[in-house]
Length: 514
Image (cartoon, rainbow, N blue to C red):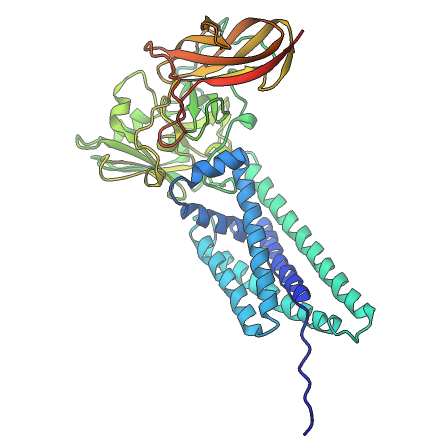
């Protein structure tokens, strides 16, 4: 009886590497397509957005604690690494049954397609093209590379065959990396381009120039007005959305007498108002930097609500973003005539940057952003507090979230060494929209001492503060606390940000050299 010889198969390592290269090439091709064609999806970003939508309660704070404002980069990296691990497994499976590998790549493409179709900024046809492109690239490359790996895996084959597989696969991986990199650069450049908006009309009641004493001259202190490029950004979008002002519209509906829709030009034709407002993220830790002050310009929310005619039973105002992200706050919050909420179209004198919500966003003094500051706004809905929960409420965050009284030490930095003598201890304090009446500093266990406070712009903004410390040699603890405009002193009770904001005194250690 004639003996049969089993067909040669590549080694596990070679098959895994072939899968990784095929997977990376598929990702690189789809990223390049997304960069070249507006409306084509980045599969990495779309799957990331889909995963964000599935996050369990508490996940947001864990991610922010771990990565801060680099959370989006971390998720991108995790998705790419996860995809390549799966591709490696599919490469190993191909040693035994190639159809399983093809089915695996098809499943990944299908997941990317489904995730892409959820994005209102993605063109459905281009989403299908991207899915097909990824599958075709993966199918063909895995077959070709496995064929090379099979030959190079035979012990009797010469070294040149093994070198051919390694050289070819590394070359393909390099091309995939370059293509993906170019695609992502094009995506980012398109996202970061300045919005092409009509000239924003002047405000009918422009803010007065900042009075003397509004700013303190201290090196290293946070600017009183944070430049747009430095302003914190926290949202659920992995890539800055590009909403077209030419096709954008804002709907005001729900429990109103006269629902209406307004486009960008019509919004700009309304009376413009401007005000400085400090906004903050509820995830901000004590002493954190997820807070900022800016000059906002836009249409008064009250003017839009008056036009719609809010019905008596409405108790919640809900902002809807272009992607159905939502944030809601009580209608009663606007009963105070001193709280002037805006549908903002400009920030610090420029058209609203894309990363901060172009073409329009909500700015509501005194409330954390997750219940009020809807970016990329497309709808304002009136409903009841009982009938609707904004995006973050089911994930464990409080439904009502006024910004807590907080203060922060900017200089000196934690752990910094300073020289003995007079040392400037300075920072910012905020309690919008109650204002700050006093700031105090404690050195070690000494009595609290009063700090100098800048002249406030308004109750809706933070202030800068300065304490001149006669520093003595040794290691010292510095703490700060603020008193708001109602006379309430910032609590020393320590809490985590969830569910309604972090509490406690910002405390740092410094080394004073003799």
